[in-house]
Picture (cartoon, rainbow, N blue to C red):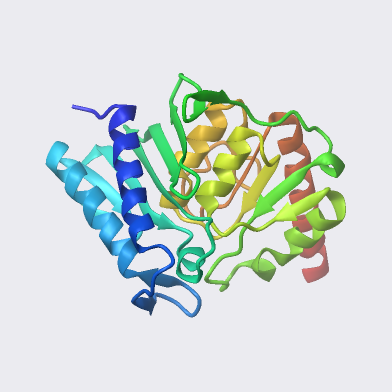
Amino acid sequence: MVPDLDFLIRLTEHAGQLLMQGYLKEHQIRHKGRIDLVTEMDKRSEDYLLGEIRAAFPQHSIITEESGYLAGQSEHCWFIDPLDGTSNYAHGVPIFSVTMAYAFQGQVILGVTYDPTRQHCFCAERGQGSYLNNTRVHVSDKTDLLDAMLVTGFPYETDGLHGNNLDHFTTFLQRSQAIRRLGSAAIDIAYVAAGWVDGYWEIGIHPWDIAAGTLLVEEAGGMVTDLQGNRDYFKPPYAMIAANPALHEKMSAAITSDDETRNDVAV
């Protein structure tokens, strides 16, 4: 038995309503890392989502940010981030989301990212297009980096990551029209799917951050790869570029040039 898109939409919207009940209130904050926060609302949202999925699909496996891997049938796998943008949420910045995806036999086929502050529900089913609420969306048609607004983020853990994305950030700052750093990877990618920003790249992300968003972009006519341009991107170390095909090619070329220059200097 497999879920339908309406099931994911219902769950993410209700989890978003739970988050809004705690928004702009004082929170119990702990640190998973030096700058990686988690609040009691992350757990409350996750507990609700896990309970609903386990009740409807008790044999499915689940990968979630707070609880990790919950074993089950490997051909049915859920990816959940119960509160993407926890730092924003804890500080009162209204940019955060609930995001979840369902994969069958290793391929994501359903994905939803819900922004409860704006009641924006971005959703997609493989082969059926991407939607914002009830309106179909498409990636932008920008083909020149100088005309493009890009979006990115920075990893919490920097060990082994060249410059913490700063090298690529500097490159695109010089070549693009603008760069935004919103604080929720799921919203970043959803905005690419909606055509509100033109391209996204990031290193040091996690599968629950991007599972829904990558489907959103692909179903909106965009291209998703790792930083080297490989389509087999959904695996460690989870780094990606998402944009329309023409802009993606130029973003990928810029990152490749960066990496080659860095390697030449190292030699």
